[in-house]
Image (cartoon, rainbow, N blue to C red; front, top):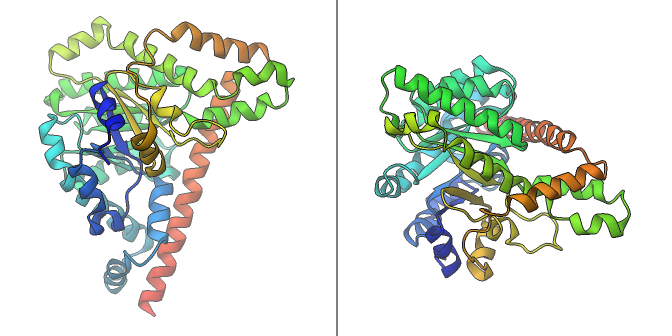
Length: 370
């Protein structure tokens, strides 16, 4: 799978991560093969991915039976199964982690999405997940809600690497970067080696187009058509501009001099949802140094097969990107309303997946105990 387009992404400074993890990928050798081929250098997960993995097939049957026999409750069982998968994936990626000095070879696991608006509980579970996985290359995912921001700072201050997720707006992204800087500053005060603390900021892409395009359908076609499929890429490109600004400040350079690593932008939700759009657009149109693109397997295969990587497609496109958002505002499509709605829906979607996951594991435990 390590086709020329994937190699070209790596040469352009983009880390390719797979947005999927399951016990089947681990036990079949499929994930190990993708790593060995150089197709991917990391993996991300989320509650929806785990829900799908645990609902599909009998890969977890033996562990469910053992957990049922031990009297484990559903919450403890889910914690055990998900952390076992992430720990095994971390072990597979350890050579990549070592070869890249900790930049890649990363595996993410998310805090319970029901805690997205509860700061202290998020901090507590982030620390528990980090301790349970017990691998240097794990990233703990914390949502970029208002309540999540202080949790991000506190977890980083404890020397734990963090993947900040569910970022939609530029203002929130700037707040996330500030939370990162504050966390690293506190980690330094707490005596941690800053070079061991890594972070990515997961900026969601395709869902922006899905919502904006829906709203564009209400304006005259001759006006709205030229803006269809433009908002998500414009938003992400302006996020990269913000990243360049923040990580060129004296505040950052002081931390960098003490060994800190920058918080890399990560493009998430890069599977194309509108079949009329090119299936690689959220990859090839978002190429820039120091970024991560985490792709579902369908998108990864499409890029490997026919992706056209032409180098940096972000730097220098900021004026055009700003124009897209300005044009949408003039049409009455509120950027703030869109991004606020997407954050709320994102949390709700993950909560629903988590509830389905708990219900499925509860049924499996009861069946195993019968």
